[in-house]
Length: 88
Image (cartoon, rainbow, N blue to C red; front, top):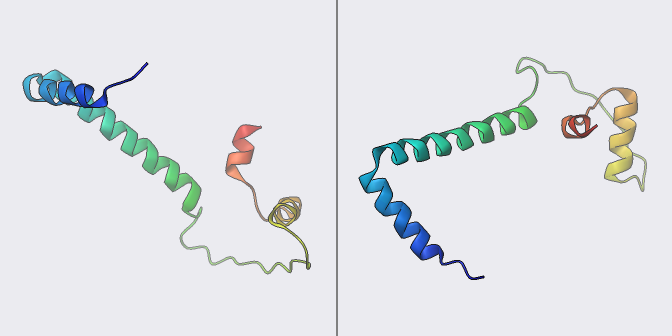
């Protein structure tokens, strides 16, 4: 089955020009996707407290990989993987 995306895009463009309800609906969907994306990025990359200057020193042993370091930090209570916690 071959999908002709050119025809689909042209239909959407024509409908955007003629149907204000469809235009508002499409703007709402786009706006919602952007907001959800920003919330997702904010939750992952922004620290809990901007005023926190708390730093830790961790000495990794030679030959330790990312997984071993992450497990060790989790066991020490210094690091918690949000995505891993959500999956459990």
